[in-house]
Image 1 (cartoon, rainbow, N blue to C red):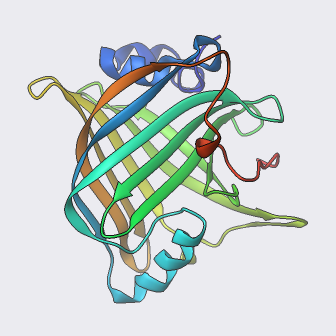
Image 2: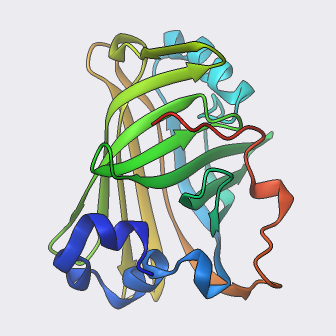
Length: 225
């Protein structure tokens, strides 16, 4: 079995830094998880009119309004098979700002859409197409695209006027011996919405059997891609 990221990148996966290859190369069959702990040098948000949208997102663990510097950070990456039989990778991020916040995402490879689909939030209401590429330093870059909202019988393309395009870059800093991440979410009309940048180190955790901790699993799993 190869990881969902290898499926998308093909031979370009080998251009990734070895540390990034390991981060994005494991699968549910390996029985391991990558737990990153570090500090976000900065967490920022857009102008005051973005705050209500960020509070709404925080309700379902999709972005949040708090800002700050030197914020303790944990990212939990587990690979598991969801209830629909799809290989899934968790991106559960916890930020210890003045109020503890989480930003949850669950990535699958969609054969139908021929890309990674990222389900955002605790209930996977928002499905987002993700494009990947490898940069000149062997970092992995992700860019969000079309978005769809699913809740019960409701299903519609989410209007980008009310959402943002996310640019994510993760790379390994050989000189500092750590991973670095930068996230930038912007709206084409309203400008900057949310983002953060910082560094972390990864601990590789061996799982007992195929179990994944309940706290990283979504409260609802969505089949529609």
